[in-house]
Length: 245
Image (cartoon, rainbow, N blue to C red):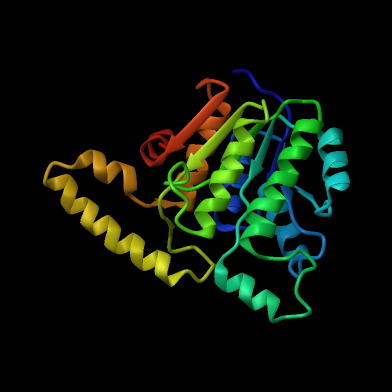
């Protein structure tokens, strides 16, 4: 499909988000990196993204405000790279000075993603909605994290927008700022076991579950989103890795 217009990246300050902004700029796309207006690091991120060649957007997380921004921008692509961790949500509940945006799976991973989707539908430009989900989100919901992603995927499919749903397994990398030791350990152990499985003939299994760096995931998502793979794309690890090359 042919898509034109700028790119709007929600979740731009996250590990994958930063790389998506970079990959879009490298493709010569007008890229708007969204940063919460109440972020304590707003000036840091403004400098970071502007030095990269992107524009910084500080629209408040309300539906009227987000609708107005997307209607003004008329984007060709909207990236929903929003997510939190259980530890971060608990920390924010204990910190009364934290952001006014409630930081838990239901509020962030679901609530903000759906708000962004509604704004994208309403803006009139029919952007491709690029949603960062997770491997296994199409199966039985085994926890809140997967349950939220399954529900958002269903909403994206029902939106009638062109879409990209990306389902990585583990996202890892030495340059990741967030402290996710369990995920890092699981990725290292998992990749080791999958490497052994591949040598024993189970290459398809290894391709399905291997970890991706933020750079690989971002490059793969942007390549798939801007390519001619059709209006509705669901990409898991192997497809994302192949597109990132």
